[in-house]
Length: 247
Image (cartoon, rainbow, N blue to C red):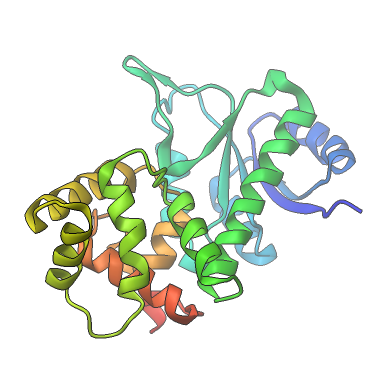
């Protein structure tokens, strides 16, 4: 039997809210609350521990600032995966804030529900990785994939190889760069620069929930290589069950 996913809907149109309440359950998504006000939607996300926020973009909010404000105001453990309903375009092309998925309303309830289930599944898997419920290999793959490290950049390859090393306590950044350089025939400085470039390129596009759970108050700033490696290595070594604000 297919698992049902809970979601909070933020939408101004009363007709569409009612439609989603009635139709989405047929596709495996229960609308826990359908709100037109951002503050009430935030309250519902916290009250129900909703894993997904379905957010309809307002026409004037081309860069989704309203959504970003909601995600950043929630406690770290309650930040949902967000799915934007409708198109988001800027003069320079499509804009995807906060690692959100996007689905057009014209795709129908099946498409909306599919995006919600996928987003919830990714968030659930990330939380399992943080809690040490997966094997070290699965944990490394889930962490990096969720954060957007696809492996297409040299620095991403270095980062993946660095995580098992970082799981060993006491290792320094220099040791990691030297070891990876020796294995790859590259200078340690080149390893560091490639890794720094990859982190800078990917971090801003990672989901807010993932960044906040990993780095707490410092989640908006692109982390230094070793800060990120150390945090991911700690997860790999046995999982974490608290956000940095609570440690």
